[in-house]
Image 1 (tube, chains in turn purple, red):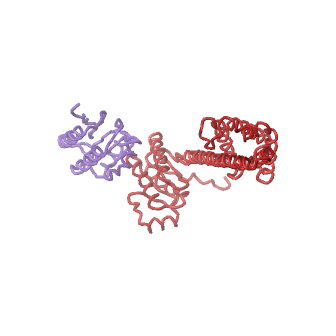
Image 2 (image 1 turned 90 degrees about the vertical axis):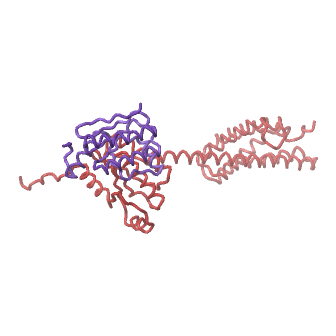
Length: 127
Length: 290
């Protein structure tokens, strides 16, 4: 699989990572996501990593980076569904992903996105 | 045969007498020392040990005690010492079991070898060596037994000390009691994260009222737990910060940035309720007379 599908749900982009995230795949995800963000004019991105059992420091950094890139492009990213074991590993590696918003599952992630967009005075819908 | 008047022979001839003297001595020790298991146990143990000891002596005269001839003796002594460790005997009482065998053996040897002082001193020396080694062995086994007890208690303590409770819908509390070392932090972290998934919690309250001291290491462990919970999408509140602890934290220059801290668990719960969009209201007051 060369690309990770990016779905447009409502006015957000939903990325569900179902396969092991290789370095190349992460790079292409970063590219695809930024392109799609521009094309759909979305203001919210949801990345679901509940299927990932292993997240190494490189992938962790990539996710952090994607979050920064998305926020520069005037959108909000929420990382959802991290497993306990993954969270512990990342913390032990010293990666606390300080700037990244997180939520327990897609449901709560969507709620968080809506709330943060409301606070920002923007409507979630693309014009 | 060189051994026909040695220890093995003496033991064979006078086993009953030696056993009697020995259990007498053991009872004497018991009377002076603290109370423990019954006399009957001690008697049976002494009989079993003396039997194995006599057999081993007969088979092998070396004072090394490492050969397979001594397996029975070692096994008996190990079991006995461990039992005593678990039952709360002192090291002295445990070692005395073996050492009190000296006198009866010496008496028996002296009677048997009264006419040969040189042989007597040789035999006494050999017996003394063997019994000293057995005594040390017994202490080692005792020590191991104690360590097992401590290890088990440690494990039980770990299991008991990490309760995660659901305070309200979506709000978890983790009352921490005792010192936080890295091993405990790991277990605390794991159980907290599991509970966050289970209960779909969005706020977790770490209550450190029961943590006696907070140094840089403990603070670091707390911050790790907070960071891990945040990665899972749950916010952490640290509560129960006593004045003394607050002072220590500031003096040590510990950085608690990005973590909500509250003095009391009640304050933390209030904040958590607000964060989850819930509120608790006082019920309509009862009017007097109606």
